[in-house]
Image 1: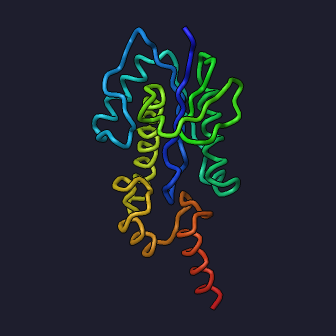
Image 2: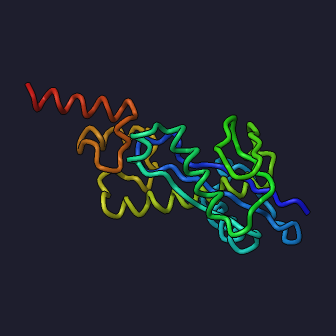
Image 3: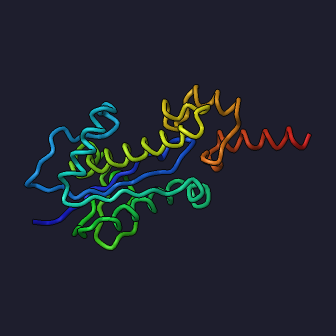
Length: 195
């Protein structure tokens, strides 16, 4: 049996929080029903599937790249870095990695990029579910300390609620300063402070 891991990320687009990635090697002897792209599954079902994946997978790794890393090296490089960390966290080394999207991180094994892989490859679907649930849990944790941003509702994405909170409270340390809406607010703040 060839060991193949699926790799996917969560949180490339939001204005706040780390980007997460997961790598999963599924066990053919313990199939998991209902695997699909995490964005197409309800939050409740995702949480249930995440537990089942953690229980039944041969191996899984979950990792992140911080807001500071995103701002320093850009979101694409930070995403690839999180993917590398997730694969390195596996307790079993796969022979091949299937990556959702059109870019592969530099890994110790052959890797293949599959556009839309989170909908067609069960191991990538499983990785997308673990990455998304881990990131959502982190955003809820940040929300506990900073409830004024309503991160529990939008998970850091660019929504009207998030924009309104940013206008009122300004960006916090968990906001991505390299992202244009945040940079614009910071520039505006500098203008007011200087003028």
